[in-house]
Length: 161
Image 1 (spheres, rainbow, N blue to C red):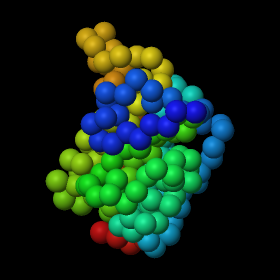
Image 2 (cartoon, rainbow, N blue to C red; image 1 turned 30 degrees about the horizontal axis):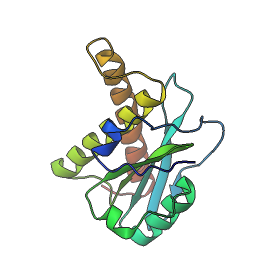
Image 3 (cartoon, rainbow, N blue to C red; image 1 turned 90 degrees about the horizontal axis):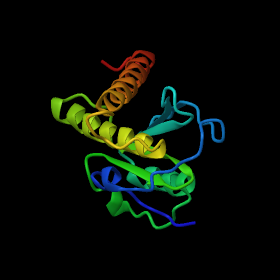
Image 4 (cartoon, helix red, strand yellow; image 1 turned 120 degrees about the vertical axis):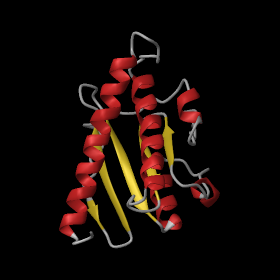
């Protein structure tokens, strides 16, 4: 199987963002002190996407290698403010180093969220054009709502302001 690592802007350009359906791999919300992980549904499309939040890049890298079955990933791949990884046969994963608090960090999430949307829409063969713009906007909104809901739940459960 051909493996593809998609970093930031490459996900949008990729023609091969295929991944498995949501029933094939279940991951629950992780409440570790060093990292957080949760999944988000892709609405009407039969798949999930995953989010990892960890400043421990080595731990995040070990998880990504295992989850995506891609041993070519290296710590330098996480030397960014956020990134989306995808590998054929696996759902895409967004990694950010910490819970977003500043406008810049929230902007990084918005940027990476678009890459997740691009992967999902590529998976269902819907190219971005005038006729599909609303579908992209809906998916973007759907993922953002889930992301910020999960973040608020986590902050409430852990008494983080």
